[in-house]
Image (cartoon, rainbow, N blue to C red; front, side, top):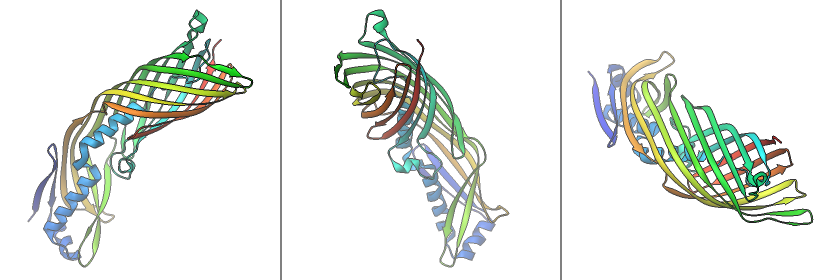
Amino acid sequence: MILCVSAAAHADSSVSVTLNQTGRDLAEQIGADVGQIVSDAEARINDLFELQGLPPLLRSFANTAVFANHSLGVDYQPDPNDLMLGIVADTAIAADARLSSDKVFSATVVNYGIVASVGLGRWNHPRWTVSANGSYASTTIRNLAGELLSGGAHVQYNVIPGVVRGHVRWSGLSITTGLDIAHWKIGIADELRLNFPVVGTIDRANVELVSNGTLEVVSQTIAVPVEVTSGIRLGNVFGIYGGGGLTFAAGSSTVTAMLDSVMVINADDVPIGTALITASETDGPSAITVHGLAGIALHTSHVRVFVQGLIAPEERAVSLGLRAGLD
């Protein structure tokens, strides 16, 4: 005899749990109602896969993809005749701690790539700087693996020229804008194993959910940042800068799931039932976000090392980079 209950977690997601006779026997051993075990198992699975909050989850994935590529190629304290090439590493994470907790999904990504910038002062336009960046990174989040492909191009205009007073140089006031694109895809890389307890009046048992099948999230975003920044340089070597602005973003983030799961107990993986998990949902990044940025830099004619942070209501990012002069 089996018991099967199907419950919808969201309009486009569901979990269907079935207990076999071993599962019914387990319920009796721990002093639990069979229906309650099924209900608890569904609730645990819904929570592990966050099926009741897919739109916010997908929006966070899209926002993280935007932040992982946010103006990576931009030098916020350029010199007019710069010709720089470098490397940068960046990590972005959703501000909602729930989305970085120990569940299946995590809106967290590490990105690294190549950056280049050139000051147009060498062509008699000292207030203008253009930059570009591109990257490809493999990403792994617990049992999910995939890739992030991103790129961007930006232009910066020094609206108010800088001023030098002794060993202190104010870099003036600059406006930066451009275009960032990102394609982030992750999916199930191997057999997915998750644990949850079932509790009765006599005892409790630890159930392991063993899942195989399709589980994939794809985020594709395009963003236009508009930023105002300024800073100072001490001894023409140590730089501090900061500013803020708006990011206008569009795109989509889609989840597709069709997982055939077996619920097992003990070291021998004794089956007590099955769970069918399905999901299909699409959302996109926040259309407009405000953000602030700040950084420090070691600035010489031919070598630049910088660390900067970026903060927005739903995201956080930290970048570390190295640029070298080519002339």
